[in-house]
Structure formats: structure tokens, C-alpha cells
Image (tube, rainbow, N blue to C red; front, side):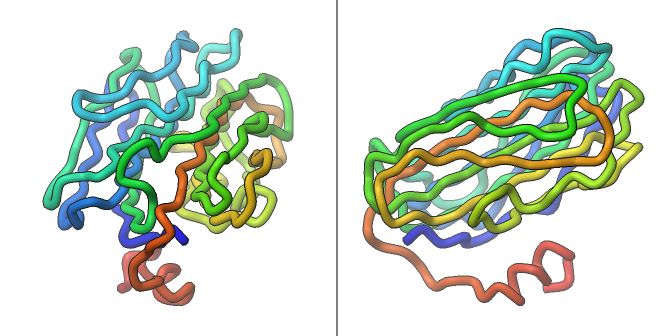
Length: 234
């Protein structure tokens, strides 16, 4: 089973052309995942991976609106120990959020399995579309970026449905962009998806990726400690 080892604090970049998250203290051989949400200014072009990273899934935003919501999952498998960073670029005047998460217990090569994306506009629900894991035991990561042209998000659900655990999110927001990142472990090969709901008509871009389990894992982080870490307390 994959284990969440650590995650960075959420990083925002407002009215900007890029975002550059970083993580330190990574253990050699682990999986490092960069999750990015971007309300792109007048562009729905899918985000591309920073140098040294690979794209798991990158959603093209909706085809209309002053801001087009994109979500991306980038990764490094069998990561080197130490620090990892990268700069994701888009259009000037965009609104960004990003986080990097380290997982243990996944394959060190060929870990990426099924992926998918989806987008929509003027709606109050959204999903990733489905993607299958071919390894029975697998890590599933899902991401959504969601907001309207006024830059407002109201009541975005967290975590993704169903069976997911929250990584991070900005669920009601008028300063940055709305987003939600989730993960879960599954124990059989099947079609996986993630879905969300929110209160105000908005555009969204969503992405999902499956990573095969190596059958190992580290020491699990207790749920209460994970929640404290998300709040910056532990």
C-alpha cells in the first residue's frame, strides 16, 4: 500500500505567468507528485511538465470564459533523495495553486497506469472521467481546478468522491483559485474516477492518475497527524 510520507504547504501565485513549488527531504526511491491548479487567463492550453518531471495527466480547460481552469498531475518515480522543484508556466495574469506530495510504496519503474482528464463550464458538478489501474494494489490521485470568471469558488466538496482522502484544497475562495487534491489506495484492478460538487456555476478542469503499488510501503501517517500537518501545526 502506498503511504503519504509528506506534503508541502499550499503555494499560490496570483495574477502570474508561472508557479514554482519545491519539496525537501525526499527519501530515495519514493514517488514525488506535483499537483497544479491554474485558472488560466484567456487560454485553455494544457499545462506541461517542468524540466525533470513527467506528465501523468494534464487537463485542457473549458473552451470559453475569460479564465479557463486547468489541473495537472506531474511526477517523478524512483526519485533521488533530497530536494525537488519545478516551474510550471502558462499565460500572464493567471491564478495558480500547487503542492508537492511524497509517497512510498509504489513501483520504482513503470508505475504510471491509467490516466484521464475532463473539463466543463457553467456547471455545479464535475468529474475526472474514468481511468483503470492494471495493478491490483494501486495509488489513485485526483485533482480539480474550479472557479468562475469572477474568480469565485463556493462550497467545493472535499475530498473527491468516493473513497478518497483529502490532500489539500481551497474550497471557498475569491482571492486565488478554487481547487481540491485527493488520493486513495485501491486493492483490485478496476475503473477509477473522482467527482466533486460546488455551489456556484463555474468552469473546471480535472485530472486523475493511477500508480501501481510495489507491495511495500513506509510507516503510515496517522490521520490525526496528517490533519495537523495540513494545518501547519505538526
